[in-house]
Length: 161
Ligand code: MG
Image 1 (cartoon, rainbow, N blue to C red):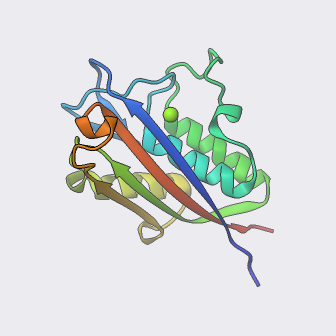
Image 2: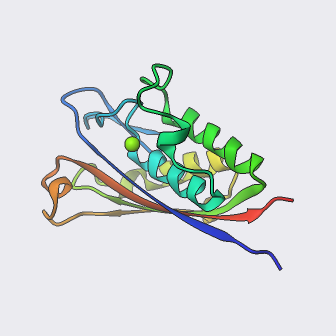
Image 3: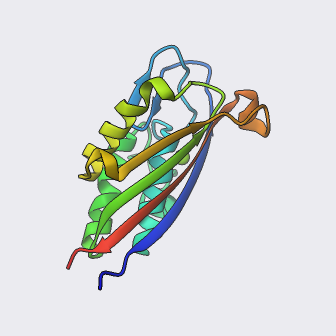
């Protein structure tokens, strides 16, 4: 019997005044970048924490300390690749990832397929094994005022050996 393990992840970042939003490895023209030590991709950060949690490998802050000058401006896709290396070295392989993005902007639906395909490629999964859902917070909470984006993710792993 294969014992699967599930991890959860959360991240939120505020919008900055300029730049271009990166979310799930996809660029959103016309939407400002999220603030962050790296490129601020809250979706990938939540997925990284879900993966690391499921593998019992700590969290994103331990793997990529925000005090580290090497992390400054680092692409979150590279951070995801590093986290996947750690997960695989611990003897696990991802089989499913589910994501909820809570944001007033951008509207996710038009770019959902792009994010799913970018994420499934990065994770080595098929598109049906990666799910991304967008929700508007209906004006509730700080991100509900359009000030930023909050993301929840879960990741399911199976032993790879
Ligand atoms: Mg983050």
